[in-house]
Image 1 (cartoon, one colour):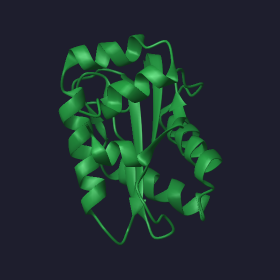
Image 2 (spheres, rainbow, N blue to C red):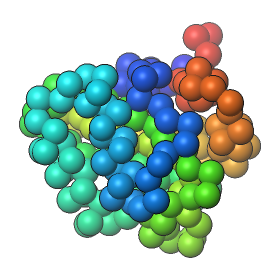
Image 3 (spheres, helix red, strand yellow):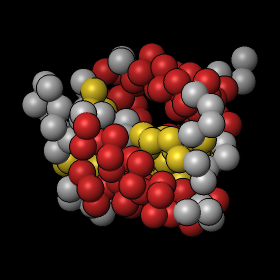
Length: 153
């Protein structure tokens, strides 16, 4: 089981098809999902730290995955949102592929452990093209959630 991802991800923060067409809009849409569920203390700061991190270096990985992330003083725990985009969004990936699975991570600026562990869990899980395909083919939020957090065993 992916414990950090499980702790930070709520099914309400999963979108089976983002409406966004650009990287910046996708980040705003995913932060909006987190805000709707968890009522962020400072929405502007949360958005700013993720956008600043993305400006420094693209958070796009191979296999059509992007993991925009940031650490904010106003966030007190790990929060995760997931968005799928079948046609993909340009996150300026080194392999030239558009990102179809976008996983946004927000965490506390006061600690790095959960943030780094969650990034590692996502990277390990989605380095497999088969896992990415299963997620993209999912017909329900619950299926995406189960595929991401893994089994309880």
